Length: 322
Image (tube, rainbow, N blue to C red; front, side):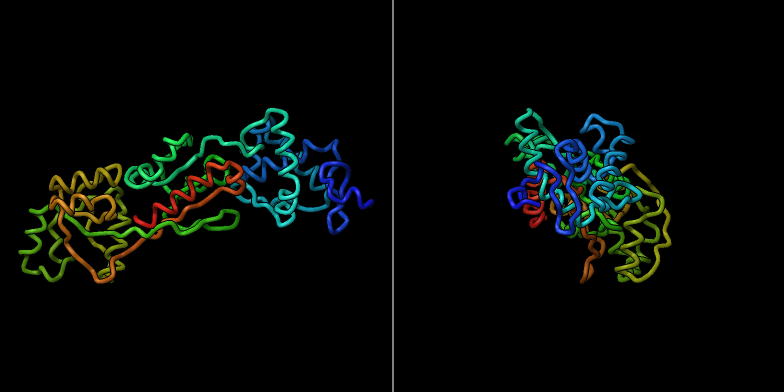
């Protein structure tokens, strides 16, 4: 290869360090498709960005892999994970391709221009913590598209490119998703004042498990996930109670418990105002309260949109005070 062509990534068939070829100008469309898949995290998510069908995107990536002689993506059950060579290739071609796209009037995923940030997480956390923290960014012009849901389905949607960021209640399994701890959520055992007084006056008040035996349990799910975990971690035993009242979400649990329906285990962030006002009372104050770590998960390539980085950094800063 002539030395004058060494840095011309898009001008001719440049060789990589192993002698493999990067496609010639006739194959710029393959590189654009590659970059869209790299940034969106899946063939399916890249297709509408390119105006192509998903089979066409798959075929173009296979062609590029044949031309480079390297595997570009590891296929996952949902989405793809870039190989080390793909990371290297993206670093070399993204700048020139973005520059070409901007000259051509392009926008969005391929140019790195600001577009709506797709954020998802638990409904209650979004309402009480996340949206208030991000309100200043919206006022500054950042566009947000927010979705609520449970962690597992949201992570699957992230892998297919539907979301840029997900706040998850557990660290994602498998490869391909970058996550960082965001905050620790403390869980508390609470009831309205009248029920709390009865528990305190119960002959077995020193044993909360016994004192709560005849108090109705309020929950958002029949399998009592939060309450069972509290009993297991704090009391070292299984919870034998059944739900007296099930409601659609934790906000409804707070409402019902505050109104006197019974007791529940709740995130402190959802009920700290009720505890401060006396509308709710702690039924137990363990030396080591049970915590659940929240994780901020980012889709590969999402930071091509600069506002994804702004939202991510804002959340990490705000979460220090959660």
